[in-house]
Amino acid sequence: MDSAPPAPSSSPSSPWLPFESRRRARDEKREAVLRAAVQLFLEQGYHRVTLNEVAERLNITKPALYNYFRGKDEILFECWSMGAELVDSVITEINAGGGSGLAKLRKLVHAYAALMATDFGASLVRFDLRDLTERNAAVARTAKKRIDATFRRYIAAGTADGSIRPCDPKLAAFAIAGALNWIGHWYRRDGELSPTEIADEFTVRLTEGLASESRQQITNKTPRAPQRRNSGRATSGKKRTGGPR
Amino acid sequence: MDSAPPAPSSSPSSPWLPFESRRRARDEKREAVLRAAVQLFLEQGYHRVTLNEVAERLNITKPALYNYFRGKDEILFECWSMGAELVDSVITEINAGGGSGLAKLRKLVHAYAALMATDFGASLVRFDLRDLTERNAAVARTAKKRIDATFRRYIAAGTADGSIRPCDPKLAAFAIAGALNWIGHWYRRDGELSPTEIADEFTVRLTEGLASESRQQITNKTPRAPQRRNSGRATSGKKRTGGPR
DNA sequence: CCGATATGTTACCCATGGGTAAGAAAAAGT
DNA sequence: ACTTTTTCTTACCCATGGGTAACATATCGG
Image (cartoon, rainbow over all chains, first blue to last red; front, side):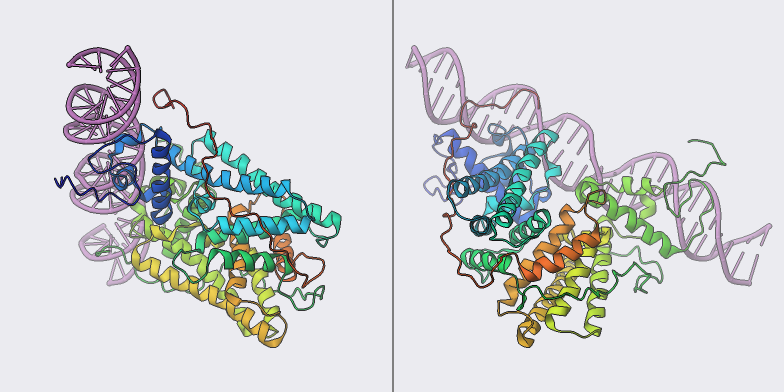
């Protein structure tokens, strides 16, 4: 609409210049779509982002996106896949190297933590696989299982070689992966903690624990998991529908 | 439509009998809506659940829901609030009791883990606060901060009284809370692990760690966080739009 | 029994946003 | 220069689903 031809002022790093030469390579554009999309999806959530918004951020219009993707859900899947590839390459690299089970686990924790602070890394845990087609969701589930199995494998190897104390690999892997995955939910680029700080600290904390004296007896007298009781909330009184929101 | 009067065959435990007497208390119905809603939201995801489905499961129709809630997002908020209340009551109970910082932390871990295996508990971490009105989202954020602060407080108290080794309470709390929150994402009622097993194991694992020998030096030689490279995916070739999905 | 109130139902509105059709404008081939 | 192919735009379609209006039926106080 604004007919100012000599001022290209495009969005930061979009291969599409506002109204000008369009010639960059296809793959470059495809990836630019993914970068814009993943950012918006993380910011606002998949369902609140419209394809119009994605396109607008790239100086194009919605139908142009369909030159590169079959639909919104495919864009989501490709974003997710980018993250999965990053993890896979990390794992490949660790597998290529040596070290005890514990050493490998620590490498994985460190790299995975850092990944969770990136857009495509976070997309791995912030996107809902139910938004994908059944076919793509199946691919994603497989990839997730592969990652989970790697955690367990390193832990099991560690208990075998003595670097990790005996424990249930399944639950231990869940605990560690959970702590790591959660980073993708709370990490903010503008926060106080740098990805390196987080990765370093998690590497120690998730393997060394907190208790001063290991092996101490734990008094398992926990408060009973409170069964839902009508806890006298302030919602019981008169009906409160109607009226403006 | 089906004119079979003597066969009430209602959905399991809905206060609305298919076509009969309707007289149960208001609050009971309100809570029944929440139970049905939270279950559907967790099963299918908030955005994929329609109010018609919620109503149908309760043997009523959509507009009837508006007698109890102002809109879909308020139902979501109330589900979330139920979970928050459960956590709050756990915290209150622990605060009332005594024990070292570590002991309190373990109680919290144990109870919180068990909570994550319940519907309303899981709703605490599986719902997207961005689906709420700004006003309700603010309430939720406050509640979350209160919970997070409790973790940190117990940890700080533990380092002060010597039951927990020196560490950054903020990151340690993130790690523990992350592992716990993640339970809400992977726990299945029909899985192999019972909530008690999970809670017990997590209580140990999250405080004792895995390494055989504490305080050992960690070789921080991790593989560099792999920068995104054009990893030659099979997406580079010819365009593949068009054709059926 | 008889209104008043609470609670449901049927029938509708309509904004939203994913997706498509048809054709213009570049790029690329010749 | 010309056609051909790719890329992008304008203009639309339409299913979905949250929300509302108007009306019906219990329930309850009297």
